[in-house]
Image (cartoon, rainbow, N blue to C red; front, side, top):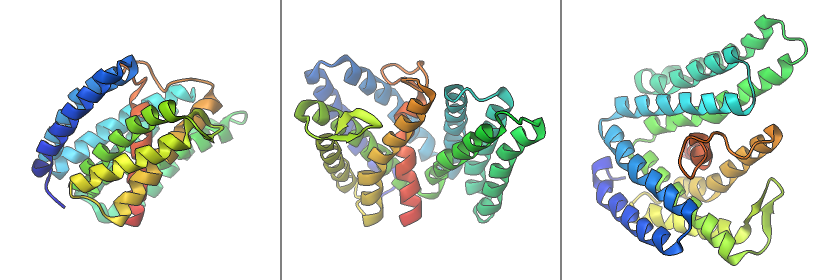
Length: 267
């Protein structure tokens, strides 16, 4: 696997090609997404280039933002959001400084979010709060992969990003059987096209392994469906509205989170 610096020319080329493609599509949604990438990709590369400490800081910050969006999305009380955000932030830092302690710290994170409604004596909504808190910890724990996977995490990020936009464009253009009732706008044609594009990016970046291939091909669509299920349960369209053309950060990272989880499990 190449180092982060070796991936920079390929990522720059992908941004240029992607910019041309979205400009030709003339779809405002895709153009806005590309603008977000044009800012995010150099920032992510710069932070990861700093090494494991930078990766841990990035993952912790992203985890806190996702936890806040998730708490607002599920209408969780403020104490639940605060504890979840702290628990999610601690995990990447642990992966950097004391990876051997990750099982203990992960268990402590789950216990912490479970204790909030328990100690509050919430008889009416306690079970729901507990389940949502535990789901949040499980959902965002794969961010430790940004630290543990090294440069491979950047390759997965690039592959999933390309797979996502390819799946969206191909699904709308080709149509065909729908993927799931959880996300009626998505089609199997888009999933297959996105998987092919994502695997092509992995090969281009010299990161094609069976584990990462499965992570990108399966993780991207499954992660998207997971967030769709959560949003349908909460009866909202987006996790937030501050990110141009993308809703919230969680809306953009849903596929990556599942892909990182599979990469960690299979790697």
